[in-house]
Every structure is written in structure tokens, then in C-alpha cells.
Image (cartoon, rainbow, N blue to C red; front, side, top):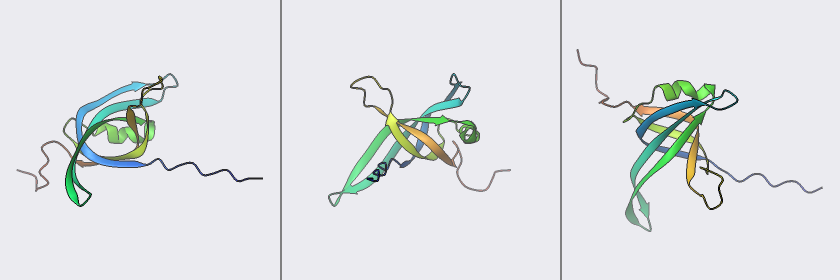
Length: 119
């Protein structure tokens, strides 16, 4: 008997700014699903040279467990989202990717300066 090969890795963790507040709905099985867009900007080193990296990615957060984190998101929030990527649709030739969130770590809310609260 030949052992089956392990599935290929599919893990992505990306930080960015929420540019579209979460839209919520329920699938036919009653599972809550939220969608939002995350914009990433950074400078990475490639070939010993700096390279600006900018992109936007659709995020899908499904299930009860992650909804508390989604409830805290608003447009302008800084967050790190970790999960797996998949195709946005399954029509032939459609290869847009979406990030399916397993964890959402909110880094800063809009207007949060990180300093002491004002009185």
C-alpha cells in the first residue's frame, strides 16, 4: 500500500487596512459569513533591492467563532488576517483569489494613536 502524499500547504498571513467595512449574511445552512476588503502596503526586498508592494484582497470570515472579531472591524481598522486562499469563483478562467480568515488580529482602530486616552 502506498501512503498518500500530504496536502500542499495553504496558509497566508497578511496585515493591512480594512478598506470596506464587513458585509454580513447567512448561507443557506445558517452559518454567518462576513466579507470585507483588506489593503496591504509594504516595502519588501527582492533581488537585493527594495520593492513597493501594494494589493487589495477580499476576505471571507465564516462561522460563529470568528464573528466577534468581525464585529470589532470597521473601515480604516488595521488588522492581521491569517487563513487560507481559494478561488473567488469556480467559473472556468476565474482565478481571482480570496482569503478565508481563520484568525483576525485587530492592530489598531481608526483614530487610535496608541497613546494614553484623552480626558
